[in-house]
Image 1 (cartoon, rainbow, N blue to C red):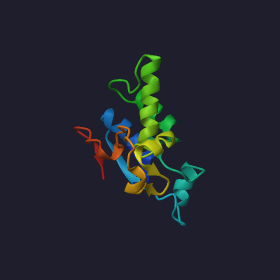
Image 2: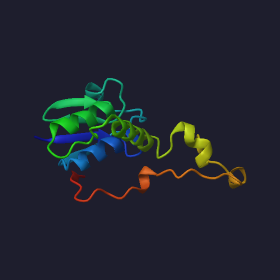
Image 3: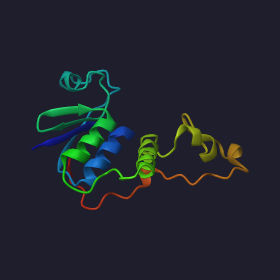
Length: 150
């Protein structure tokens, strides 16, 4: 059953879908789609009516929206569950996924971390602030045994 993830390399949402596929050790192909390009392919727009990313195609079934994709991957493929069994664990997992999509920082944490829209705060504005320990999804090590095909 062929599996393809369509997404944009700078998208945190694509990153979340990739992590789900990698954790489940799913063999998949990646197709680069720039949703900001003036010429988004019509074939892609037929799969995702809003032209956003990501979109997962598995055995001819196309699904878009990150939460739907990760839930589908969790159910459709063998392996350990991606969601904890307890409500607190599920909440924490959801929080981490949102952090990953935001590039490692949620909006409410921007002032503490020194991040604002458009980039980092100048060092003079950071003086005297204690930075919150916030992980950066881009610094995450690759999943051992990744299975994507470029």
